[in-house]
Image (cartoon, rainbow, N blue to C red):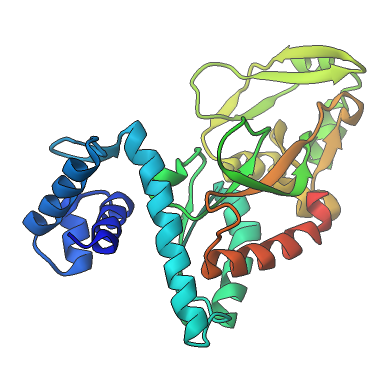
Length: 299
């Protein structure tokens, strides 16, 4: 069995999510793909994939082997491109994920710039408000807005965002401006949350945490609709600063209780390729890091 062929087949199964989809991409039968992976597992003496009728998932051993295979195959591709004199031209499909609104506002322009610079590259963007597993979903680069747990992933800091309370000037003129977190109990609250339970807003009074049990009149699962409600003079919303930066800058929204804000959240570009990063990922990272760090709304 050709080792590079087996590794490439295994990586394709993981990245496409199954044997049938890998077979279509490789233009072979599913039985061929299954046989190659089975022979690979037998030679290694470990189970790499857990198979069900609907999905295949990496085992612990398979996860580490997948990362090694992907790195080795990337190095081979880079070596071939360098020998052919085309190393400076990224090619292939770059897969990205980011929160929905951040993706629309900040990632999409970078991706379009990237694609215009590198005509042999394509991009697949997953803009979802959940944490996507890079290995399970075959993602090259992710935007993470949070304190990151320790992991084997590579993280590049590119900015930070604040968690702000905001309302329209018209709402505040009618209902007054809160001076203390306790004053929020008398106001109409807008909540953007994926949970059906009332949100808890964690604020800070110096070094002392302040917990506000918000009782929203309007709860929505999208930040866009929460912003729309605030712009419509309905009440006070809590959002990330980048989400309302333009509205605040142009006076349509006003931030509130700034002195009670918790510490800002860092923004990272996360990838899994270490120092052996492929050319398509390296070119995107170089462009994205420079662009995001220059954005004043992300400082």
